[in-house]
Length: 180
Image (tube, rainbow, N blue to C red; front, side):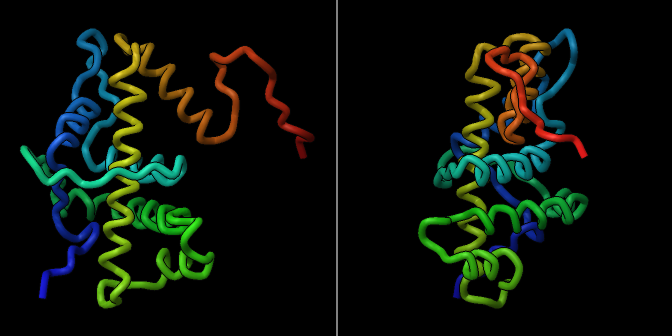
């Protein structure tokens, strides 16, 4: 019987085309500022999963070529955040195919011993990879060339994900409704 991959307990390998994306998003973006978009691959992994679930984006693993490893010890340092991201992904994953009860069970109930667990790990990975592709396209394949460009792109992404209008978009005002 094949060994069950334990999410956040085992090392994770980005492979193939995703290695370049991770490297692009975790290395210095502007030599003048020394800034990076993400400080580490584990922070990118976490963010990409949430972005993938938010936008309902998935991508299939690429098992060819080079690999880049996230050590299990790095996951343990971010375990609570990663577990929360996993739960968010499972609650939002496959909305058209699964009932709300099934999604809640996937998020909170199933453990490594359950037959659904390997499928859920694969689902999480697909959403994380979909988010990774989105982030790479948003930050690297865009016209960003300087730190300020990347900062504006990040502000726009956060505004878009939170449902708020970005300060850089002057098309209309935000209606926050009554305040208290």
